[in-house]
Length: 386
Image (tube, rainbow, N blue to C red; front, side):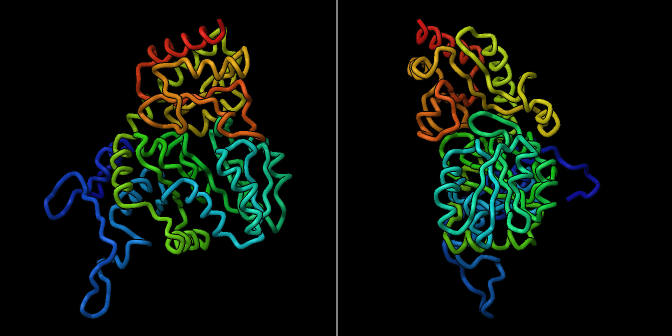
């Protein structure tokens, strides 16, 4: 490695997967390491660094190294799902650790925090994370051990000031974890803004092809007690990502910069056009100047405002569901961050108690031409409102 060479751009790091190649054949595509057990040295040591497949895997390590480089992290861990990654952060805390989390966030984690975490002895308070005063009021001196942030928040795409919440967390002696799934490491680096841990549902943008379920955590403090316990939990609970899934994830991350750039450009274009559409009452997208979190997003997001937006249909819930039923280019499906554009009536998924308005459609903008995406949704809106 040439130490005089300037740091490589994330696009270069991603495209070359840190420049590694297979040492035996010099193949530029890394192999999939599927072995579950490894030969011990004659003197009873494991100098290869591998003992058994449940706590560690060479293919997983490669994908973790690339993610850590993109996040500006010292270490990263991959899990079998985003939920496995997120819940491991909570379970690494000593109960009765108090947790502050957003009212608006990924519904499955919100459900787990409010229904399952208390059974393990963790009291939870959900707050408007965009209201810093509310966050400060929710913190319990000597009791709060974790503040969880999701920004942009799913599915209303609110923006939380990560640096400001990091100060609140430090003052309280709590760890700050940020779900940065939608921002990706290319638009926001939470660790540089003061977060202790950044989390991704790697099934989404990191993979980008709707064929992997995975989760990820990254940290700037791999020697912390919290991180050490997360490592132990992953090993003991068998939550590590499988080697083939890690290989697919690594392949997906190699195109992450170009995919995210294209999705951001198309989403911004569509948000502007839909904001003027007569059948749409409101567009929720942090890239719009009228978005309440726009100024903060400008400070902590570089290179775009993400590929996710939501629209509220003027005629209400029935028209929103009818619109989703009539699209052809957009696909009616759960998830986000893939190469194909998805549309979803989110309140139907989240069910009773959801903070999601019933007239809202969540849009994940993929790599199709934005003119085709606009025309398709425009036709569906007009038909549903006829």
